[in-house]
Image 1 (cartoon, rainbow, N blue to C red):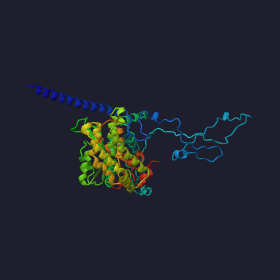
Image 2 (cartoon, helix red, strand yellow; image 1 turned 120 degrees about the vertical axis):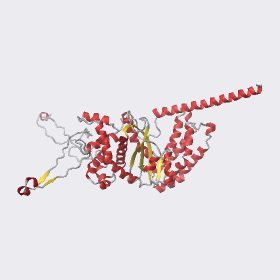
Image 3 (cartoon, rainbow, N blue to C red; image 1 turned 90 degrees about the vertical axis):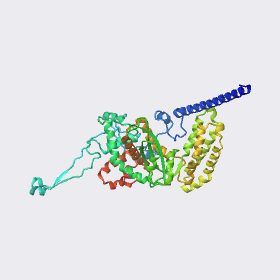
Image 4 (cartoon, rainbow, N blue to C red; image 1 turned 60 degrees about the horizontal axis):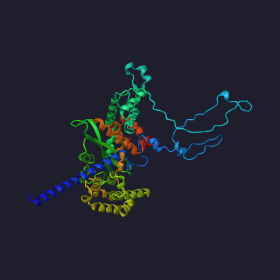
Length: 523
């Protein structure tokens, strides 16, 4: 081998080594980014956090403010009319008041000057407090009254006397000697509103002296969901499809006992809901074993309006049937935020990712201004086209000029942010089609959050039937909240009325009807 050939071979090896070093350096940088990002997600503050959101464990420490004034009370002096001070009347409005009059013992009612008897000549309200009465349990016996005719008793044989019986409400669960509407509503509210697992409810019932097992409660939940809540769920679904703007999202759930699938395999809870300004708000969950696009295709079959979603490509299968996909700018912004958090703190201020992040922030600042100005949909669309759309177009012009291959790794956090934005451009820009559309899908994310919070407590579902029952129960509870109802009051109302009316009258129990609003609305 000649000298020139040896030199060429050596240069080729050096070039290969340099390429390997560059790849390893880039890979090491990527790992460092992922480590910082994972650390931030675990311990850092979230930019997506809403005002007032906090961790559960240090809630008291975070919210405590020694200088904050308590709600003012009514101040009353003897022989003086009640005088309203501040907003204390509003604070106690609708709350029943019990007066506790403190008096001196008879042997102490002595005048300190002359030793004579003293008498009450006035009262002064020193303070008003809120008192909590813990859960109380009582047994209720339903007694049917039987009537007979006295005239017939005199002339007819004993077995021929006509009898008339009083009407008794039908039970929620036939054959159950325990389950009442209020008890079932209480259990469902604890699980699906307060995220209290059934095993903890079992323990709490035991402290009240009641032996109700978690297995029994699980059976009750599945029964009531399938027999009474599912018809309301179907009516809500019919109302959902009548809207021309919907939001959708999905999250994982683990089901232990599912035919043909490993217990560790992720299943999914899908969410569909109406827009924020819907006259009849609907929030629906649906359990499915996969994240396949076939599920929204089936659930939204025939729907042809706007659908606001995240970047999951499965939703795009709906476009051939006339659905216009509107994607979420919050997701695009979040990826630039992740790219910044993946860097050393010293490198963040001058990072290129800041440019993309600020473009997105300017869009959200304009949206907040539109909200403050209380614009109509037409006014909002006009302002968006004039003020917001040019910023979005400038953002994409900047993103498309980024030399990722030359300066950035396409799979780095910054490269991921740029690639995501460019790939989703068409659907991100669809927000400029209608002034009623939202710039983000945060409404759906907030609606699915109660489920994710509950999942952190109960971790998994035991069976597919349980997961489906939970989807129905969450739907009823979240629909109640969206319509400004007290969830437990609405559940109890359903369990009291549905067993006693014909199915064709179930629409009378939907959450926006006048009767339900009157009886179950949040005070």
